[in-house]
Amino acid sequence: MRALYYNFYKEKDRGATEAEIKMTCESIAGQNLDEIFSYIQNLDDLDHQKYLSMAGIQYQNTNNADGKSSVKLSIRPKLSTLQKKILSDISGY
Image (cartoon, rainbow, N blue to C red):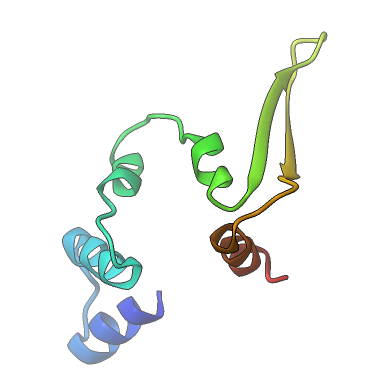
């Protein structure tokens, strides 16, 4: 958000286009973000398990007897160095 604010609003006195937003995000991430941006452009459900597991978080969705759905999140017992870093970055711990 800071990069978009400074590069477009402050320096160019305008907002960023969708392509410029994606380009800025990819530049910061250092990789192609087509998969992530596809979620913005369609109604597909997010693959929670896939993305939370990158941070070492286990995602479990269950249906209760009363028909209600619940989600349980837990931290996996053995995290890689990268998972620890991601988890720290998103949680602030």
